[in-house]
Length: 202
Image (tube, rainbow, N blue to C red; front, side, top):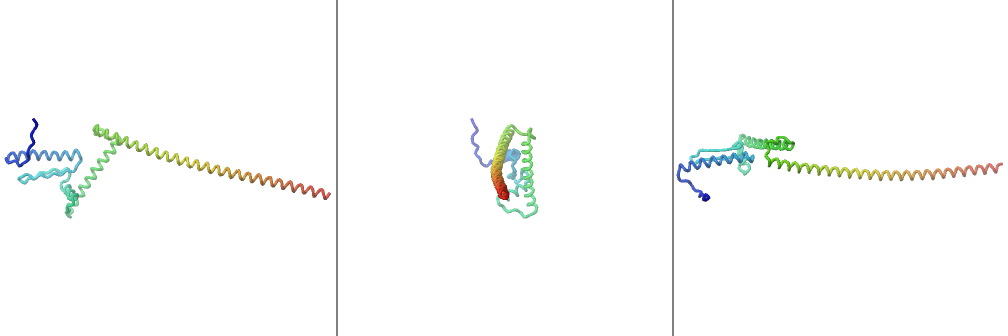
């Protein structure tokens, strides 16, 4: 038989109520700690016993976390320099943790510190690296293709320029040949006239 559903209501017996409070308080503090470690979450927990005694857990600075909470929900912040310093300290700690996390990921991508990763994390890293390598290859293929097309266009332009120059050179040769023939013809005509004049004089 399974356990029946427990009805939530105030425990009337003071001793039982105190025992339950201690057990549930410790369990809640443990869960808060586990959440902060497993998920890298910023956790702040405050508990006041029926007698008014305070119990607390904070994964970071409690004052800084409370100041951050007030900022996130839009509650007015204290203008006291100490409060502002706590907010800045909390933000700096967040940035520091982010930097450490990113640095660890970069080392993992470089094949370092892999012994700290689980099998699931290694598979995820392998998948991310495979995606990254394929993106690099795709980028390389695109750049290579663009470079080849650019060279082809340049080669075609050089061919067209060569053909244009060759055509111009042939035209110049034709003009030179025609000019040479005309000059030769004029020279022969002049020489023939000279002979004729000389013959008349004789």
